[in-house]
Length: 505
Picture 1 (tube, helix red, strand yellow):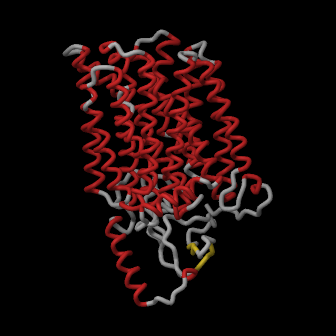
Picture 2 (tube, rainbow, N blue to C red; picture 1 turned 90 degrees about the horizontal axis):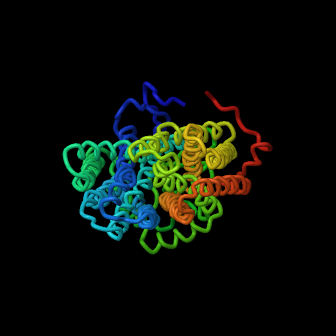
Picture 3 (cartoon, one colour; picture 1 turned 60 degrees about the vertical axis):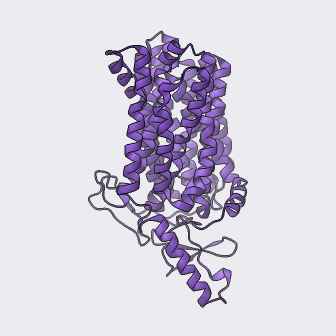
């Protein structure tokens, strides 16, 4: 698979089968770059406070407990937001939803300078937390633009580079604060600093709305209206057509067959079968009512693969969210560093997303091409096992700063790689409900972040024990979950029994 291909290759559904990363070619590459850029600036504003919260607390007399409570508030609201945003993407398209979230979340971020106490900090971070929901349109957008054969890479790249926002904010916010502080007081400096990420988010929201489109075939709402008119006309002309003969529109091809020319048809019971001359699959439940969406949520939520992915994403992205909140504090308190130095070291954790989550997606796609779905599960299991091992190692490595930094790099890489391998599997669980599943699994990541933030609070500075618990949870859930995970009727054990076609290079 080519990442920097000279020409972008398109399949018969209009989806790209490779990448031209050095290009802003419309619509595929422009959508990909705006998806990760939007998620990145949202992450910057979402986590703009932790790098300089020490200065805010010093000025306003905010306690450590209130800081931990604000960390949990920033994560908890995102759980609800992601659940809501999934169906919104299915109805209005990812581009409009992305722009709306950026606008609604960035404005309270810019108002951070107005807080006067700990309660205000907790309340404000709760509202700002809706920016974390940008993950769902980010993944939904790339799913519309790229073929299933490269979907793991596309989703990992967009989300991984977006997650870099956490690392960038640990570099950017202290630098902005220090620059303003050199000309004024601490109070004015921290109150003014948050205007910068707010303005960046508003600018990117404008780009999303005005210079991109939702699908390879055009604007989401326009396509939805065309489908409504077509469906109405077809119904009036042919009322004798049975449900079994109707082709259900799908977000993506649900079964990996190794060949990009496969098209899927969904019958009355949702059983997939190959058909040869079927219309391109372009959207998913664009006209679903609120009642049907709610019922669909319940049906999706009880699927065992969805429940397992919720736990695994909680152990990966949830871990990342919790560590983003405390990593600067870990190095500041354990090794008696000043706030800026500790923040700069902590930024490495988030910045590794430039390669780590993408590596998880690439690994998933590579084994997926060789062994289909069992290969994707094997890639996921491998990454989760190494995540748990290095988290446990970090808990014992906090006695020395150099070993702590090295082990942080390793556990950071695999925590984020698991995020990529997770969404190398998620789009194939139930393609007809992709928006809902992405929202539910994404919310699971934030639920994990909430739980692990609470755990850090309860351990009250005992970071060794906290990271040891994180590692054990990730290792145990990874081994057990992947052992029983079944997607499209395939399990990890089928890698040893199935006959797999030799991949074409």
